[in-house]
Length: 418
Image 1 (tube, rainbow, N blue to C red):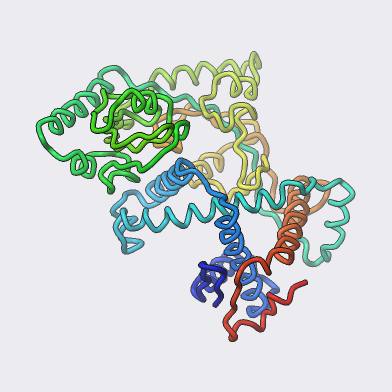
Image 2 (tube, helix red, strand yellow):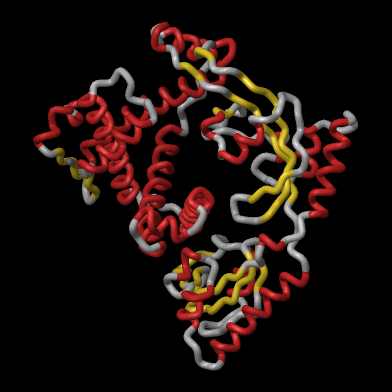
């Protein structure tokens, strides 16, 4: 449908986006042709951001891409149950799917970085601007919000015991001996490494810059010579056997075999007892849930906010349909103010944990109003200001890159926007 420098927009891209939004009910009252033109414009702007990022040498770190990729696969694996089911659903091998998603995620992060640069000077809306924005919404078009809840948790992650650590180290030591006896490191990495991102490449992490990996890993790498194998290195990700391929200044290229303890075998009884005791203190009013979360929760993302789990828009109130099913079914049986007993929990990086869940508040379905939904409406207002800044950037920048739109879709008049 369109070409922006070396980036293209396919009709299937627009159709996929259109039907996703249609399914989510976000295109109500919008003519199909108008919606498709808006989506085509959105995709062209994203391609412009990618093109400008190339021109201005804006890049994202490999570490960010791999972290997002790992989270994406963990979420899919938790949802579908296994890697085999992911392959069946997409009709592709995990390796091929990873390669495809890696490029997609990199582009998303680059677009996000460029967009943040464009909108970084956009001020947050004043109360007057929020009220003005809300007043422009026709009464019969006011959004209707579903059930919203405020949920907090306190997470305790049991440590892996010495026996489990030793078992993993012995497995890696055995693999190290096989390499020293002549077996190919890359082939062993493909077969045994639990870092799915690098395993398909024989454990090769490609070129990295000092500071982009965990300290324990880099401390080992910068003591090694090319071709050497490391001792067994422990990090927050598990245990590594590292092979240094090459090194130049502050850059290095290494391969690794990563093994993790079996988190399903971790003893959670001590963590459960700790949280049970903590819950008793909170129920006796000798300690608030918020202070307990700040002092004891091992979920870094929520601890300082008193354990509150934020929604995708950063709001402390979350729509129940946006929650993971396990958490939803748990709070569905709770009363406001109630604290659950310690419950098993799986962290984002796959570790076994235990947590207390606190249902802080619950709001029934309702029509949007400034009194009850000010923060959410303020977020809408701010997003509108950011979108206006992006559109202004598009008008200023569109002549700096090559843009061609197929004649069949030129009726959208995207390039005539002033």
